[in-house]
Length: 430
Image (cartoon, rainbow, N blue to C red; front, side):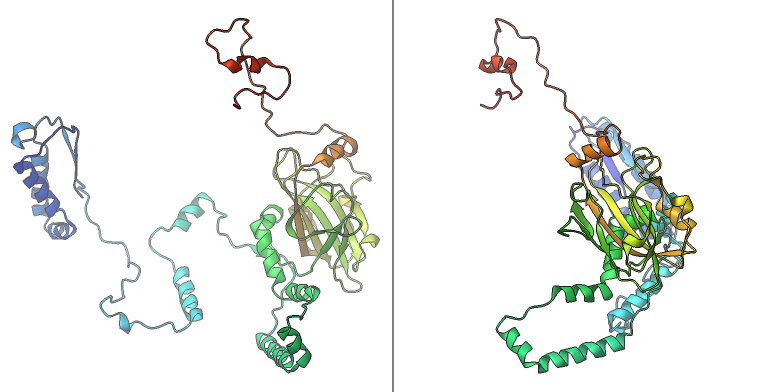
């Protein structure tokens, strides 16, 4: 491409200048460039002619008041590609001869095969992986093995249910009169057994739970946790819902399905709360060797501490993780003093705890909520932790006004309002 930039704006091109510019643009069009690329000698001669013509000033080109003409001409060689280009083998003149995919699965399979083939050009992923070697690395599944049910059996059972529903006269009558009621508990149970674990995993990835608790690892939460706060069980923990520290001030009630004779470990931690180390956590609750689903019969390693998100730091994530044990575990090294009101003793890392006991336990359940500062956090810092409350909010300084003058000259009528007693000022609102 030939770029001509005139330094002066006061110029009037003559006929000779227009001829030279048109000649240059014609010669360096894509078609002309291909012709001259094959004839290197002619190309060099053409470039010399254009450069000589473009560098003339004054009466030679008939340009009036022209100071300088800056000419940029690419003189690089046109190098053929280092390998085959994408879709180079496709004949665009005869698209009807291409093989049809006929189904999305076949198209997706071939697209994945083409995507996994190595390419000779450098892709965006290669640039990112060079800057961050862990980008795009495959994560390890550390959860319980998932056994996918037989698809044929599911379809057969679903068809049988549909057939029975169509034969049910009372169900048809209730649907027609719009009096049919669906049990939400049954819907919840069906969701937990089918697509629920996959949806929970996606939510945990979205909120960065696996990234902060189990770096380069994840698990499929196959055990559902039912967590309720308050005495009337009116506040429930789902997967990212918002609770206040006042609502989560007391120990929650937790229920989950467990086989008889099995042992479990329950953990409550916060990856966003640590005041000194951004990579560390504060443990809020830890109970080990829970027989079956009886949480009260477990071994409390660290007693419950209410959430204390610091003022001005936004929402914090509080994560419940349920581990399934292979057998009884000796948690002597993980026991905290009771009561534990020291943040140093509560400093914790979930990944280190799991690596220590990974041969004896497997993560199986997950639930988490978000929390923001309220007035109860101040009481937790002062009365429970016995420390001063840190605040990370910007406190605006008072508005500065110069000393008051007894006889102000050329001042607006609201001048005296600036020096009135009281916090609320009235100047500037009328």
